[in-house]
Length: 279
Image: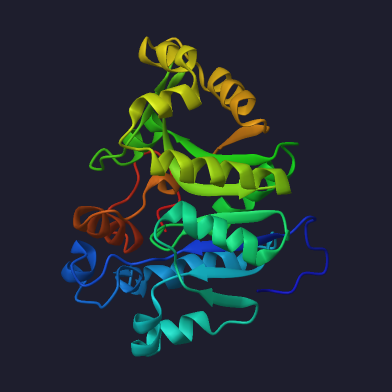
């Protein structure tokens, strides 16, 4: 991580979720690599791009990479070299993203704030990290999530398909950026794990979120701000959103098509319409 004469305070410890689905992963197979985070985007492995963006930010001081599994790390010199950076540690992934986050938070022993992102966030930049961390630190909350306006993403990159959450004030895309700002924020990861465990029991999940919230959302009457207030009350936390202006913040690599699209953006073969970082 770069040294800074006047580093922001507080500085974040990064947690990068980099678990792998194994040799059957479609991105690994298409890219001809042993694990997904080694798939090249713009000529560099995705994980390297993520670590470089974090390392360039004055807001971040070291961190953990959760995954890939130990056998892959031992077999891949490129992975070992990426993980052998000052201030960076590798830890084995757990059985799911939320379990990996909980394990990482426990391992960090209260070293908040913590920035969580993913190893397939191939277009992540220092500017995105700086903006998200600065806004999160100033939010006065326990937990923040990065979002992008779906309309802005589609205007910049009409060829992409992004999952969106529809609110009365517009649809939003997730950006795979989360800030756990206080010890209380760990409860959000606990709830995430419980919801994941009960994914085949929808009534229990609905009771956790609240019928009123779900009904207002289904009717298109729930605004983002109201939704955050309701979730905050349910969890007993202060949950906020950080809206990122860069459309690339919403583009991660979940499929072979995503990988090829991200690679084309990073290589300059596809350029954003009307703005965007494009790198």
